Length: 87
Image (cartoon, rainbow, N blue to C red; front, side, top):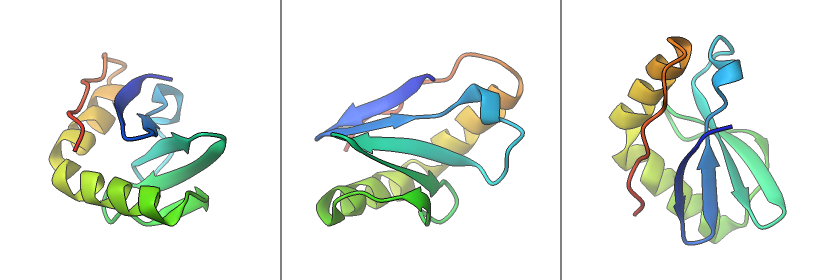
């Protein structure tokens, strides 16, 4: 599970094994809490994070949507993912 970013307690990963599993999404961990968020609109698909962490994540998702979509495309091609800068 490649880590694509880590900042302010958030660890963000994208599983290449899920490249065919729409919609495009990322997995996020803060401490022992985990959640899955859609890239397109930042909506939560599963799990839960503390409210402040979720706000930071959604801001990061909005700022990096193009790079995240490119990583999803790379994952579908089974190519290495690119790290994305933190907030």
